[in-house]
Image (cartoon, rainbow, N blue to C red; front, side, top):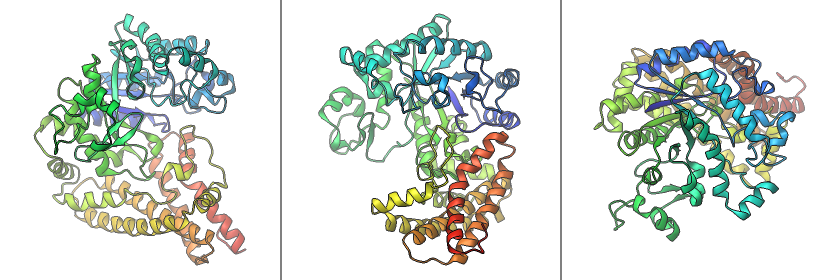
Length: 533
C-alpha cells in the first residue's frame, strides 16, 4: 500500500482541486487514498454537522469514481472515538461527550453512541460502495476513561480493555462483510495491557511524524522521546527485542521504528504513516527537511516485510497547501523505483524534476530557513485548535500577557528577530532560484508568498512585543506592517480561491490574519487618531 491521506478536518477542498490532485497522486505512484471527510458531505445521520459548502453525495461519488478509474483504492476514514469536535459542538449531541467541557471525544460507554456510530458507518458504506478497508480513526483519545461511567469500568477492568472492546465492537460488523477495519496505532501502543483482546483482523496504522534514523532517541508511547540510556526497565522488558534486534552493545542505537515491528510481531497487519505536515509547523510553510527525513525513512521501513506499506498523512489544520509539501508527496514513487538511493540523491532528483535545475542546495536551504516558528506563525500561538472556533479579538493581548507572566517576552522578541533575518534570507534565495528555474514557477510563487507572509508576521510580532514591553517602537513601522499584512491577506485569498470552498476560505483568512491585524489596529487606535486602521 502506498497511500495518501486527504484530510478535510480543516480544509474544505474544491472538487476540481481534488480531481487535479487525484491525477497527480496516481501519476506519482500512489495506489490508495484515505478520505477523511468529516462534515464535508451532506450526511443524513448528522445533518447538523454538515458544512454549508459540503459536497452532495452525488458530487462526492464522482470523486470516488475518478479515484477508482485512476486505480486509487478509496478508504473512508470516520473518527469513532476522539477528534469529534465537529459533532460534539452541537447541543443535540453534547450528551455523547466523555467530558462535559471538552468537545474532543465521545464516551464509549454511552448507550446512545454505538447505534449512532453504526448508522453513520452504514451511511459511509452506502456512499463509498464496495470497499476493501474502512478506517475507524480512534487516535489521541486522551480523555478516555475519565467520565464517571468509564472510570467505574476502568477500575473493574482497565483503560486498555475499555479501548480494545470499543474498537472490536465497531470492527466486527465490517469484518463479517469482508472489509478490513483500520485504526490508528497510538492508543494501542500507549495502553497495550489488553492488546491481546484486540482482533488481529484489524489493521494498524502506526503514525509518528517526529522520528527519523540517526536522531539518537526513540518515541515510546506514553513516555515520549527517550535516549538509549533513558529507556526504562519496563520498556526494555516489553520492547527490548524490537528496540535492539541486533543487540544493545555500545555503539548500537535503538531501532527507530520498533513500534511497527512490535505490532507486526503481535500478529497485526501494519502500515506506517509519516507526515508531510504536522504539529510544530508554521501556518504558512512546513518544516521541509524534517518531514522529508521522516517520510524517507518511513517509506524504506514500510516497503519491507513484515510491514504492508506506507500512508503519507497531511494535516490541514496547519493551513499551508499541498503545493508546499511536494518534496514529501513526490517521494514514494522515487523510493520504490530507486530503493538504494540516498535522501540526498532524491533531493537532487526532486529539484531537477520539478524545476529543471541542478541547484538543489539553494532551493532546500531557502525552504529550511522558513521552517522555524516565530510568535504568531503557528497554530498554538494563533489560538487555532481543531474545533475551528472563532479566535477572540483580544487573543494577541492575552497571549502577550501570558508570555509576560511566564517571563518569556524577551526570549520571544529575540527569537522573532532571528526568524526575521532567516525569513528575509529565504526570500532572497527563492528569488535567485526562481530566476534560474526552467519550470515549476507556479509552485515557487507559493514559496515566495510563504516567505513574505512570514517576514510580515515576524515584523508584526517584533513590533507588538516591543510595544507591549513599552520600548516605544516606531509607529510608522506599524503602519507599514499593517498595510503589508492586508495586501498579503488579499493575495492569499486569491491564491486559495481555487483550493478552498468559500465558507472555509473566509475562516482560513480569519485564522491566519485577523487576530494579528486586530491587535495592530488597536495599537494604532490607541496611539494615533490618524491611524491606517
